[in-house]
Figure 1 (cartoon, helix red, strand yellow):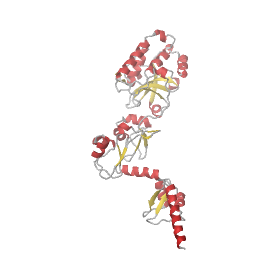
Figure 2 (cartoon, rainbow, N blue to C red):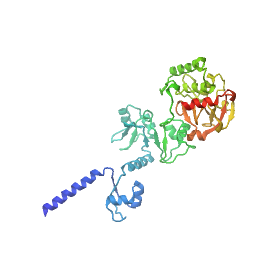
Figure 3 (cartoon, rainbow, N blue to C red):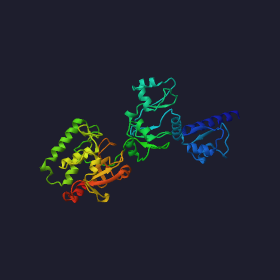
Figure 4 (cartoon, helix red, strand yellow):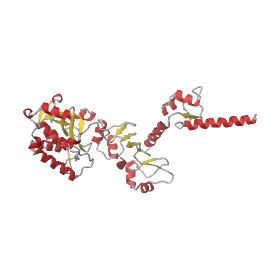
Length: 386
């Protein structure tokens, strides 16, 4: 009988060990005063029936100190713990760029004895960088706290807002423009809700560009020499009647516009270091021999107004963004697409008028080229062929 009891005990241990190793996603929760199955279910996003089944409970009554196994809740519990810590100011919840190789961001988990100085030395960054990146008001650290090493170099794609966050605060944290952050997320005001996920970078643009049309420029960091060379190339092309003889004025306009794709954006820029939106438009129209004003505000008052449904290739499209007056401009390509020098993409790019931000901020279109000079059919056909 004694041997039988020992055998049963060993068997019981093996079975319990098996279940412990096959339920790695489970966490252990200790019942506290006031806890109910409904509260625990809501807190950990696990159904009451799952808790009962996992713990073989016959009723909903709980005893203080009882250990419960919560199925499939490890990840959700981590998110709640992260948010709880963030509310107390100990850390912030970042989601980094992800690729096939996994998470690109570098975090440091604070261990006993760690200081900002020792962490900074380990990762070859400054203490000020760590404090600024993690929004730390003091040098005190807690064991288990997550420290993001460098938000600028690892460039996370998303950020989850915590209590007290605003668009301006998040933009300042990531050294972004508030209008750019609003544009990315289709936001109107400054308020944010805790748990709200924000895009910090443009992801997976579905606009395809033809390397023949763009001149094969794909470098993200186009320097002044390349920009200058590209502008000179387009200028020379604009004077080559042999190459342009069979193209309508619209086709010439769009050819020059696309040849300048990926040139860098620069606020107030008008040359080799970059172009702003109105300077880009002015140069493109200059290449077809038309002089137009320098600013978006002046350009809006220059052309002939066109209804949105009547727009055609080459019309200027205007937006009211950071100011009460027309503050952004691009060139319409047809099919609800337009090309512009974008402060968001930091380069000349193509976007859709149907995207939430541009749809909401669109204020009108203007026609600069007289209709008598427009070959509307030819222009639309040429663009659709691309």
